[in-house]
Length: 96
Image 1 (cartoon, rainbow, N blue to C red):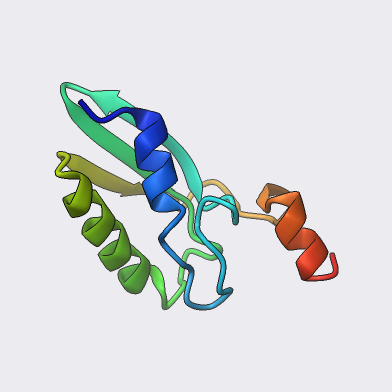
Image 2: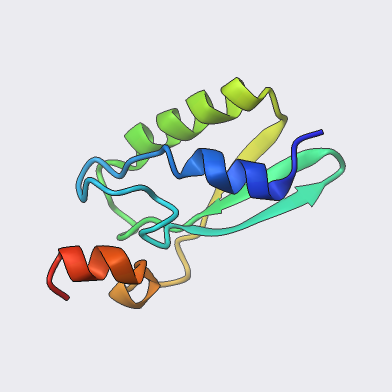
């Protein structure tokens, strides 16, 4: 049985096309919940109108299919993404 931690690790392979880093390190994965043998991935785009959302969702689908898990992605358009969510190593690379 796949665990939440394995889902998070697999999502590190999903690259935000605009920023060139993985969605986990960028803080774009708000949380992963497990409900009734289904994983709910809460995705927080950098902006609600981000043109790369479909490409990111396609990558998530590909990675979840590799794990053969039942899942759903919820897009969180209410929480505001900020640079505070970004992994410290990436901040350093970006000079922030």
